[in-house]
Length: 398
Image (tube, rainbow, N blue to C red; front, side):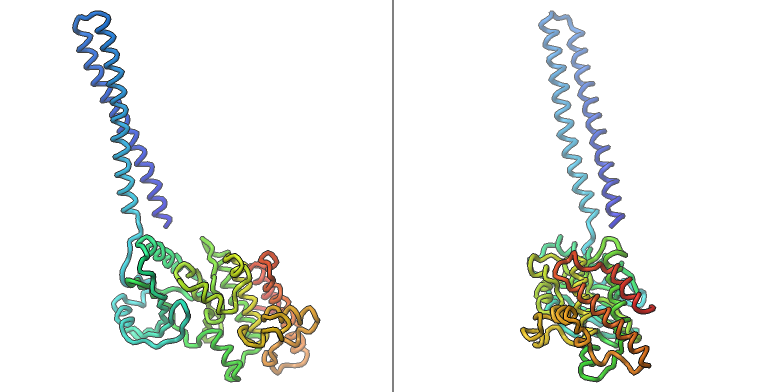
């Protein structure tokens, strides 16, 4: 992108120089022609009326030369500008665009053409697991089909957005390894991580199939907010996730979180529907369709509430009986009433020594306060992701 901007600036300077040269040449040519005519007229004997006519012809020739030169210069500049814009356009690529040396384009296309294992689905597309010829397993997200009327300029802009996302690198982000532009959709290729998402993990916790103690849950929370910190402050241009929820947080073998689906708001035709159904969107997203980094912080606050309580924000419990109508309202209600211990998931405190257990419970209660602040109705009352990293890392050594 930077190269294309510099190229455009350079070509603009060249175009201006060409125009000036053409104007000067036209003026010189006009003046030469007029001088010749004036010499011819002046060389012949004439009276004062003839001299007057000669001067009028000189002025007329000069003026017509200037007008002609300007017209041809503008036409030439328009042609040059059109040509420069044409060659500076991002090429509209078809087939795979690879960002990893471990993925061969032909192998990827061949794998995508076969039947793949469905990992999950959403209103904006489906996740698949596929194995390449070299044995590498990757996760593929196929976005919902684009509208038939989408212009090439729109598709080209979408391609530029995907290429920008592919340049982002952080330990708490799922790096984009490749993308495939098909006639009516995009497919995004990521590393495959067998542990699944935070949503899968919390479902197993609720079914008593998995134990996540407080140390692991806090590590997950810190990893998520560090990923947000990189998106909000560590890259240029800054990126807003726009769809942060447990299903978009992938856990590796050590339960280190990695964010996925970040920055894809322009590529997802059904993103608003997905947000509304998720239970993790901030109030301003529904009130005025504004989505900022503080909206991501609200979504993180809901995830923090899920880690603390073990509850799903879409549970029927969060109705009129929940003292607030939402997970955030329930947390705020009990925290203000001094009953924050009532919200805690009883499975998050392990069997440690009593003194260590008390210290851990203090950390958990402090995290409840942090979650409540993140869930403030007004964006300006929420902390930034940068401030959240400091808050949470002070609770424990990471």
